[in-house]
Image (cartoon, rainbow, N blue to C red; front, side, top):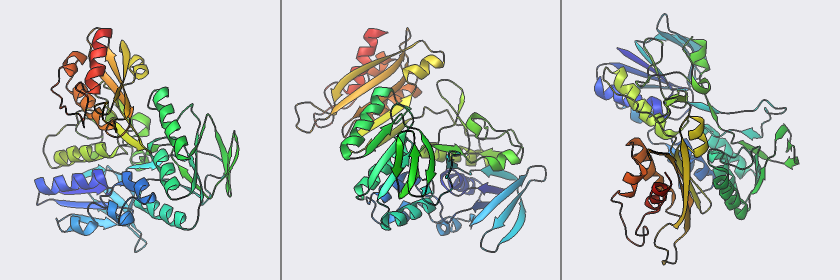
Length: 442
């Protein structure tokens, strides 16, 4: 059996490892268009900010030779340009040799990842404009920072965009964030997003909300709020699935143009699976297909795909969109549904908010934190959570995500046996405090 995998990062190499372990006599071939395998793109802002000893290379978990030592045929700088599902073949370009060839497969995994959204605006092709997705991107961005690109404009106020703005401030550059919505981090409720904007402003970052980018000119970003001088423009608008290869092969696409898959990561085309940022997921609460590009999902879905391609039976249970970020001294996290999204999904939902501290308030380093829970009226079922606060606040979102996955009510969350000691929490953990308030309201 020959397994061909297109894409050598989180999803692709996780699947390759699972196949190799479960089917040691099978052939596993991985095509990767870039120069790196198994790396952490999430670490790029921290490299830019100078927080990572060893630079870009430190983000590589396993280089190609390590995978090859396990019997995986990893072909770097090889780009798959077409898939013929009728013949069971892929066409690929060897960028080293400049030659095009074809290779047959018995089972195929498309793990082509995502790509930064590039708005169709005048000047979008200028060399000063860069996305943040690959280690090649990181190398270019580090090099540009070293070349005195001091005026940085970040277009879009998502997680990566905000982290990149902070990274350049720490490098001694100026940074401006341009966000067309009322506040950055639009996945959060407005007041949580405003807390993020306030933290960035306090750091010295110029946050321009309700401002639309009209186009780009050399050394300039043209906006509805006037022109902004820029040596470097970073696209932080978000990521879209890199699914053109699948589309051109006639493989069905789904949510947001991502490759449609079932809970086994199988596409509707026989012998073809997909995983990672190019594939859709299914929301655990709504049951609807969604596209959420997160490294956690890429690794989990790669594992499921690999197990099933090797003849096993693994399932993806669904996702909640659990995410966490740190901006300056502020931590933010969310999981599940906000009240607005829960109502839109058909739930009779409400939200409860409490103010607390990261640990016992009488300790001098206790920081404020806010917890908001989304709850189904009547049943009290937990549907979502948002947390914002100082150091030690955000990882409590894992309690909420676990409780939602288990189908728990807020009454059950209030009774959880959570750890307590003054340096870690108040005697009632803030998540439990919020659950108690929710019990009164539902």
